[in-house]
Image 1 (cartoon, rainbow, N blue to C red):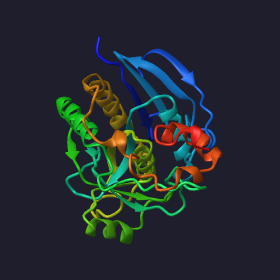
Image 2: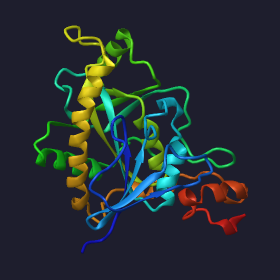
Image 3: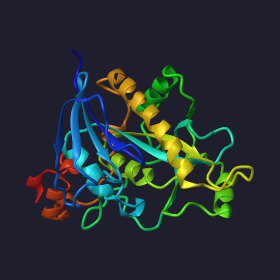
Image 4: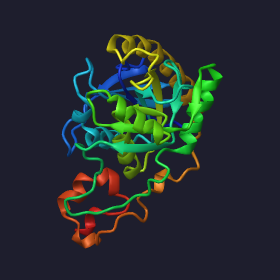
Length: 292
């Protein structure tokens, strides 16, 4: 038996459950940032533990702008998760990324304006490096598994994260294409930022559902068509997850687990005691409670 890892799966549109897990139970976590999107489903897949969180809640109850991003990532970190795979539906901004294809992006552009994307503030300041916003090791593992399953997967690319919930205007879609962006979605960027602050390996498995609205020879984005593609994509995403988890090495060899090592700027003596308590799963290894 290999080393047991704790792996978080954040499920996006259409991915509300994870079959094939043993010893399944639900875990409810209280966080300083309110309740997560839903109860977290804990189970075993081979030697490893999986913690599955439906991003929008079961029944798809939460808008992208309503998502409790901090609570979700805090809860996974609190449960001992070390790596997070975020699955999500996206629109394609490139002709070669067709509906039904998978994308493992390596960059983001932030077009949100109504969200909190950091654990810090309220008396503590930290600046983590985010030049390479996803874990290269975890991302490559997803790509390798997708190829092994004969899926069409695009390696790298830029994910534009928009506020939503409306889809883009045609002018916006053309603007993002002029920037060289690959896909557009509404959720993954804040997750990536918070995972970096929490020193978690993070990667996105993006499921292309449509061509946004830029492709003039295609119909306007229609939610019924998107949902049909999502159903097929979700089945493929589950296969990728089942394939990739057993291949994960105990020591990924990336720097994600030391992202905060030199990032906390605030004088330790000046950090409020309550902030130290609230952020203990995030900063505890660098800022002990005895430093009140």
